[in-house]
Amino acid sequence: MLTVSSATTEIEFLERLFKRVSAIEAARSQVRKLLESDLAQWVKRFVPKKMSGYGLSFEFDHATGGGAWQQLGLALVESLSRLPGRWLFMIDELPIFIMELLRQDDTASRARNFLNWFREIRQGWDGADNFRWILAGSVGLDTIAARYNMGDTINDLFLIGLGPFGADTADRFLRALARSYDLDFPSEARARVVERLEWSSPYFLQLIFSRLRDYAAQSRSTITSARVDEAFESLLQPSAATYFDYWRQRLNKQLERPQALWARDLLSTVAHSDAGVPQSLLLERPGRYIQDHEVREEELSFLLRMLEMDGYLTRLGGVYRFRSPLLRAYWLRCEDA
Image (cartoon, rainbow, N blue to C red; front, side):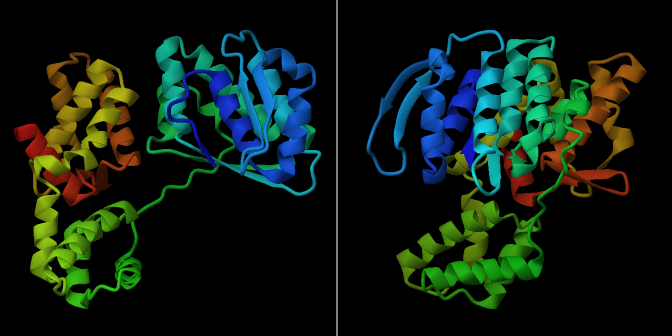
C-alpha cells in the first residue's frame, strides 16, 4: 500500500511506487537490476544499503520530461510480472493526485494521459493479469472523471462505496475497543453512541470512543449515556475543529473557487433544515450565480452527485440531508460562527 496524496508529478508517483515495491524482499533484487539497467539514466542517486525494510536508496530525476515516466512505470510492472505469484497494489488518495495534475494543466490533457497510461498498465499488456489494483480515496475518482469527461479512462474499474457499519457491527466494534482498554462500556451507552452517530463510520466511532476513554480514565467510572452526550458536545468545540476541517478544506482542493463556494452554500442550506431539502429547492440556490437554466441544472447535478458520493449528503426520495449528524452539527456551528 502507498499513498500519493502529496505527489505533484508523474515521476513522483512512480518514485513512490518503486520505493514501496523495493521494500518487499521478494522484489528488491528485481528493482535493483532495473535501476542498474538502462533506467539508470533517470536515477538521480542510487546507493545500495543494508537496512531493515528498505534495502535500496534512490531518487528519480524529477526534471525528467517526455514519456520517461511512462517507460519507468511499464519497466517496473513488466519486471515484477516475471516474479512468481500475483501482486495486489493498494494506492490511496489517487484522486487527490489527479486533481493536482488538473490544477497544473486546465486542459485536462495531462490528467487524461496519466489515466490512459494507468489503464493500459492495468489491462493492456500480456502480464497485466498478474496484478490487481485497489484505488482508494476520500474523493471519488469517478466524480472527477465525470466532471472532465474522462470516464473512458476508468471504465475497467469496479466501483465500491464503503458505507457505515450497521448497528450490530458498530456495537461489536465498540465492545472490542472497550475490551482492548479494559473499560466498562454498558450496552445502553453503546446504543447511545450508535443512535447519536446515525452514520457509524469506523472513524467517527473511534473518535467518540477516544473521548469516552479519556473521561473514564479521569473519573475511573463506568461510561454512561450522559457521558456519551458530553463526548459529542466536546467534539463540536473549537478545540476539536481539526477533526472536521478537512471536510471544508477538500472542497477547495477538489473544486475551482466558484464551484467550491456553491458547494458550501448547498451544504449550509441543507444543514439548516432538520427534515432535509428537496432537490427542487436546492436548484434555486445556484440561480443567484448562474442565470442560464441548463447550465445551472448541470452544475447542481454535478455538485450534488459529488457531495453524495464523497460522504457529505445522502438522498432519500429526492430529499437531501447530511449523512452524518455530527458533521452537520459541526457545519452549522462553523457557518454560523
